[in-house]
Length: 194
Ligand code: 5GP
Image (cartoon, rainbow, N blue to C red; front, top):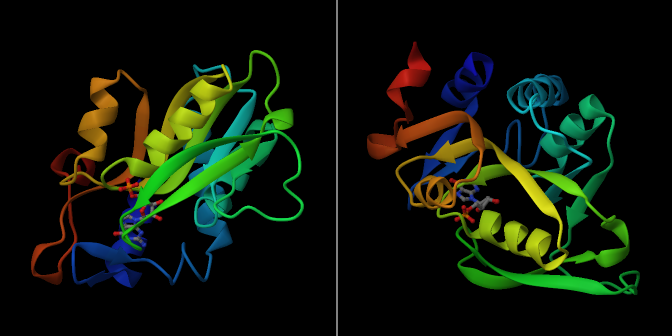
């Protein structure tokens, strides 16, 4: 997605440890107009799928996922990372190792928000080693629901997540695919630069 690539080039910052900081438009300040375009692009790319609900992980997945849900006209379910007093219903949990925080967290959803025959489109901000994606897929499976695919805003293609998801036969669509962050420079996967 050209618009997203340009935004990453202009406002993304490469940090130590192969981390791309996109606080200016995705993870902290949110460019809602870009998010709207991202929502439309995902809907186009998954147009052949029947989707009943969008699933994401708090907090950075919420902005793009909300736009996808709005565009599709379906609800958004946000997997939570912290148990709170209001999470009182029957919970389904999975474990996720966080690349940026270097720790394992439990993620959870309330079973009451998963209907019979639910067909989820999973949306997340980044794909690195695929830990968040695995956790979300685990939640879907534990609810006996279906994941029709995974939409990723920024994929770090030099890490293992994409390969693993491809091996599972999951329909993955990434709007920006990064081949490398070497020398503080963002290089995109070649076919996307056409
Ligand atoms: P994974 O679970 O695929 O290893 O990593 C994906 C999760 O880690 C994303 O949900 C995102 O929050 C975080 N993440 C991974 N790499 C980056 C990065 O380069 N920049 C930022 N801002 N977050 C990242």
